[in-house]
Length: 338
Length: 285
Image (tube, rainbow over all chains, first blue to last red; front, side):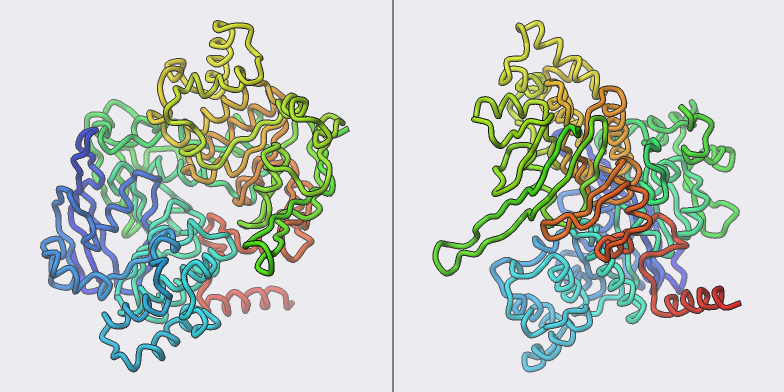
């Protein structure tokens, strides 16, 4: 289903790991396309399979049983050898991880780490210093020469993450995977880093796959959202649709449990009961059914297929899609007085 | 009289080796706050603003450099060690990371019972067991959690264990230091509801330290905003977070993302311009 506008498309990707507790089915039959220049968010709670999906796109999943295809251009990345991956990783697809402090080597100055990325990008030795300065300038670092001399521990979390982003950009990837890039940062720094990613993606026509558990971060950033649960995509659509008319009960629950600045003090938090099932022990049928207020016998017997809604590009995996009363926020519901 | 009254609290540390390298870090500067019975006070601020140090001073884990802490009118800092321990019993702290705050070698029953043992609160083995089981039930854990180890529980359940451990000694004040920040949102909501229930059913006061303003808005009656060791603004949650008067609070509120794609916290340049144009257009008649 790769159209010319698609930069990358994932087809029926499944990843499982044999661990002492059994077979962990981390990613199950995920199909997803990333368009050129778009910002797509992959959202879900811990254990939903977001990170394993992203790591598969970088060829960084080891010791797993993998099936499916990752089409990039006319190549299937899933079939590459580890040597062939090296030409793709960093060059075509870049990554920014959650904790900048552990992404950077604490024993090396920033200079060596940025230079290494520039060397891989084919920048000659005499141009590396000037390139590094301009690269750090691009990610909003005020004193590039000073930062290059510093060790990572001498930088703040925000500066570290900017350095990590500059390293990811050194080879001008067409897709940047940002895995919880601001989870370790304070809220003001988070806003700056997300603004930076937004601007860089736009300027360089770079696609960004944002992986996060925080729907608030997604709202201003992504054009489309894919919601994962139990290793599957349960809903996919453009951001406005996902936030304003979510169809999957999990998406609805996730949105309702996200605290809102406009809620009143004393309002009950709208929790989803229960816990995310472990990947070694996913329930039959729909993985969400044990926590779902609408679950029926059919949900246990039959796996709901991700299929289209009226709205173009809006996909939902639920047997009862369209038949569910869109759940209301607690303030509007009848038991608000309780 | 407030249940807990903190005034002029300061805590300084010395960093670096002795001599010329040494310099003083004022982690907490002249913090004054109070907590009434049955009240939830939010303490917000960025990392390094002194929230946790303030909490640790109140919980008695750190001795402040200056200031006083009155609990039920009694200055706890003036007490001797044994009296201090007794006076602190009703003040319990719950920590951020439930993976490091529970001893992996102890059973949940032993973890929760420890406060009873240390404070000699139970009349016997049977009484102790009953109180632990009651505390587990209060936080929504099954009775069979008693003999299991923390390893068997998820992050949210571990935080419930930590809350049970605090509850078993019948505290008046719970100090919750970022207790929901490492949890998934659906679980975070469960734990926040549990804390709200403990307040309304038992009348415990809660000092709720958080960096997520959304959670604070929904849970806390009042909020105190910390920056660089000092409280810069305090007041009822709704007014502080919707009409902040201090520049620092305003910047914090502005940077907080809201789950609404029509009110983005980040914008592309041309969107900025359009947004400004449309507001200008609306203002002009």
